[in-house]
Amino acid sequence: MEQHVKESPEKEKTITDHVGQKPISRSRFLTTAGIILAGSAGLATAGEAFRQWPRRHRPVQPHQSGGQASVKNSSQDMMPVTQSLLKPVRVSADPANVPLPIHRSVPVTQKVRLEAKEIIGEITDGVLFHYMTFNGQVPAPMIRVREGDTVDLTLTDNTHSQQSHSVDFHSCFGTGGGAAYTTVSPGQSKHIRFKVMNPGAFIYHCAVHDLDYHISSGMFGLILVEPKEGLAPVDHEFYFGQNEIYVDDPQDKNTPAVFNFDNMIAEKPKYVVLNGEFNAITAGKYGALKVREGETVRIFFVNGGPNLISSFHPIGNIWNKFWLQGSLTNPPFTMMQTVQVNPGSCAILEMQLPVPEVIRLADHSITRTARQGLLAEIEVSGSPVPDIFEPVKS
Image (tube, rainbow, N blue to C red; front, side):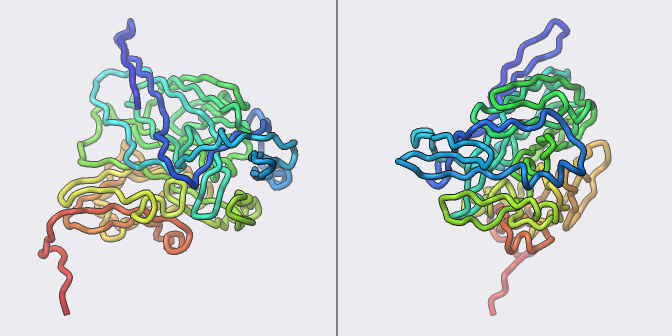
C-alpha cells in the first residue's frame, strides 16, 4: 500500500491510500473484459426483485471462436475479446497483505480508491467462475483507519464490467452505509466522505439490489477502525474472509460454472471458502502461512456470507482473545475454542503459539471444511516442547 501524507491547514493529515492487489501469476487464472449490462441505480425492496433475479441475470459464459475468446450474456450480443487481453491472475487475497498498525495521535483524512472489477477466476481446479470483486481480490482489500478519521472514498466501476456496483460501509453513518450515493455503472466513478466514529472491525460490501449475488461472487471486505490508543503489538497480523458460492457443476473446464439463484435462496451453497477459493491458503495451493513457536498472531476476519453463520475454529489451538463481532469498545472474550461470526459481520481474534504444529483454520460446521473448501493452514516452526505436547512412540 502506497501512502502520501501532508499537513492540512487545520493540522489534520491527509493520507492517500492506493488500495490495490499484488497480481500473482498462475496459468489457470484468467481475467477477461466483458460487455456493459447496466444494473439498477439504487437499493430496491425485496419481494418482486427477489423473484425476478433468476430470470434477469445469467452468469457470463466465455466462448471460443476463430482464435478469439468472447463473453456472452443471454440478454446481450457477444463482444469479442482478443487473447492478448487474457492474463493470469490470482483472485484469492494474500492474508499477509495487511496495512501497518497506526502510530499517530491526530485524525487524518484518508483517501481510499476502490475499483469494481469482474474477473473470470477459478474456484478450484477445473471450475471457472465469474467473480465480482473490489480491486480484483477476495476478500476486498483491508482498509485501516483510526477512530476520528475521515474516509474520502472514490468508487469506480471498471469499463469492462457487466454490472453496476456500489459500496456499503457498516462503519458509515449515512443512507445505505453510503451505498445510496456510490452506485456506479461501468466506467463511472462516485465520491463520498464519512467520519469513522466507533472503533472496531466492520464489513463493507456491494449493496445494489442483487447484493446477495454480488457478495457471494466476492464483493466484500473489512475496514478496521483502530481505537485512539491503538492496538497492542503482536508478531503477525493476517486477514481472512469467508463466503458461500452458489454454482452448478460446470459443463467443462473452459466454461464458468453457472450461478444457481434457487440454491442461494435455499441457502445451499456448493462451496464455502476462505479468501475466495477452495482451500486457497494451504500447502497444496498458494502455501501455508509461516510463523514461529512462541509468537503471537492476530487475525482480522470478515464473514461476507451472504447467508451462513461461521463457526470459526483453529484446529490444534484456541482463540486466546476474541472481540465479539469485531467490537473494540467491549473487553475481549478469552480462551475460546470456536466462535460464531454472523454474516455481514467481523471478528478480531488472537492466538498464542506454544508448540510447533500446523494450525488449520476451519468452520466447525465441519462439512464446510471437510467437503466444501473452507480451510487455511498456519505452519508453526520451532523446537519440540514435550511438556506441552509429545507424540508417544508405541
